[in-house]
Length: 549
Image (cartoon, rainbow, N blue to C red; front, side):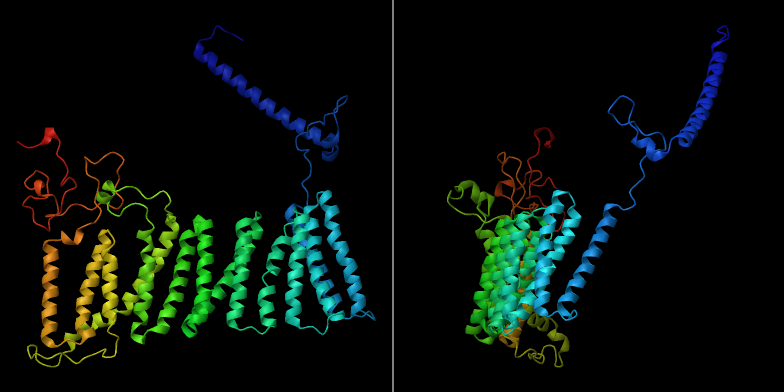
């Protein structure tokens, strides 16, 4: 190469030579690949070892092994179809006469075929044919059901069908559990055993002539067994099957208990309390399900105890009885909290006793939510008198200042609606949150509006009560301090380190700060109107360098 050229010209020449070499190399590689495909067949080339070595030669380009035309998914489909066809054939063989062979001969043939089908997966698993073993094992399980049917037809034809089915399902569940435990690589036997275990107790109760209560108790015992399987077994398929069965039978038992609490409270209350205890245990053992399970337990307990109260009190006190149960249930949230409700009180009090048992947050949340839901339903039941008291003057036909009421409505509505509103107001006022105090204020207004209707007050006391309600509302709008007394506030700047507020921050309002804060820059005692927005720094300590002169 001529090196006497200038660097720029020499660079152009080098690039041109390299491009020609790359093009020539590409042509030679393409020609080499064609020659290899022509000389060496793909399958033979992949299997030839290197000469003199025990290592298989790498495949030539384009000579890789041919992909299997029957992948695992296609094999599974074929095995499933084959097992289904064999199952149909076995069912037809058992139920339909085959030549001159009677049911006894068919039972003997089924016994032999069942034994072979149950023993075959052992050899198949040793050879690694798991899918084939699953199909043959499933066929064996179906054949065991047909064997039970044949046994009933041959030897136990006079027995009751429901009773025999209950016993046979229990035996099959135990046999399938043992079979699945002996061959743990098979995934079908143990879930199928859980399905079969759902039948013995309910079918046994039906065979014995039990009523809805006995059937619900049998379903609940089965649900308890399913819960034990779901909590203490490892395979996911077994747990999912147990949870599905527990949900179906538990839902039936719960609906039966709710119906009995309305028709026969002394029969439904023990059932509902047992359901509540079981769901509470599940909530305790499974924290992710704690809120939902404990809410269901709380509703079951309210239905049980409220049903007993409903049977013992007059009809006007039925809803207040349920509301009282919900109030007790909602109080679990505060009773189960180990710390004091007010941080100011907690600073001067000792911590909870060492032996005290604190309920988990999820359980307390579910129980309190169930109680709050019952209270909300009771408040909705008490709203018609509020609507009549609010909209009654619209339908007035007499003079405005005549001193007479408009035509009365809801004359037969229970007067205990006002008591329900009072309980709701007290329950909301006990919660140290801003939203709860606003709800309590709305409940008190509803109570004062409904009182004239519920108590059938004369015109003058009604007018005085309405004026008093209006005056109280205006007073709270001007001075909301009493309404917010005890509400948790944001942490002060000079609070001890590590002491965090237990609730959402509530900005200090005018007239709610300490007496010494009046006149201080940024304090709540400034001449600011009560409806003006309070800045975030209100009540906070002003830095020394930024204090005005």
